[in-house]
Image (cartoon, rainbow over all chains, first blue to last red):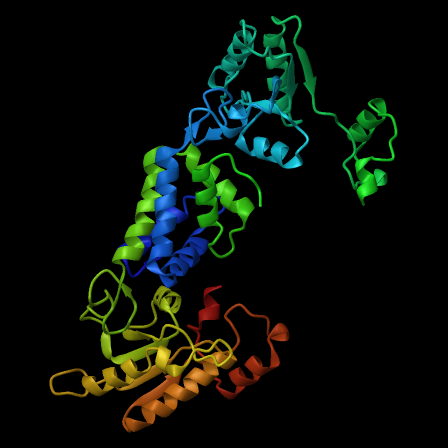
Length: 216
Length: 216
């Protein structure tokens, strides 16, 4: 390991290089950059990381990141409380929100079932999803009538979809849906993979002049 | 700009993405990573950045980064105080130290003269270099008898070399040297650039069986 001229420098480089995708060279570059900034700006970075970790909270209802007990989405009365979209993590909430196409609420699992990585259903927010649906059927509440499984189309995603689907069988009137599979907007059909193309033919939809591709 | 579900998250992402080479996607990835760590580890990162910026000091003699008034190199009595290597920045000190071939002291300029970027000689530690050489000639001190100009071989480096060289003319007995230019160890001659190859022929050295290439 290289010798740095200062213990403070060594410590900052050590901490930076523990972050994913940041090696010791990048850590050194970032650290020297901080030293060139005005002190307040570098100190502000440090403080916001400490505040983040000390003060961040998770929504009691959907387990999304939040500044308070209930996240902005769950607390918004304009959202459709009858539809819940199940996602792996906070990033997927942001990705779906960015589409502006979904008006329902979310349920963040905090991961996917993975026997390889030793992640069991009990470590995820699956029991709390079942409980949340059960409670929504109480008097005076909006009953959840659709759960959208929006997990990755990987082996872990399929496994988790299957497990949740079986758990939801106890609610006979609940609709369980999943994301449409098909070619991407902007894709050239020639290069689409066979499985995706096959799915998009099976699940073809009525043609409309307002299709997303017409915005190109 | 994307919407994040938490003010704390937004603030951490904003601060991360001000760092060089870190865009908003990477900043989000780093921030979510910090949230998965144990709180102490994330807090430790923040604290070491704050301490770095608040407590870091520069060596009074060579302007290298230091934890105290005098850096580890200047404070080391085994180093050769008669030879001073002039470098652009702290990174170059580390690079030369890593070679283990230099036993003298350093003088860190803090940049290069650059009319394009509006950096004048007065903003660099050039006057302090002249003063340091002058003071070393006082009674009872080790007089500096060689200055090695180890700046980048760029236009700014050449300009700075020239300026310092003229400033050092006032010391008639001072030897001013610069790094040898030549082909790199491990280079294929066929692909060496013409200027470098030309220099390495002009400055050829006696052949030795202990040449660095023999370690391959």
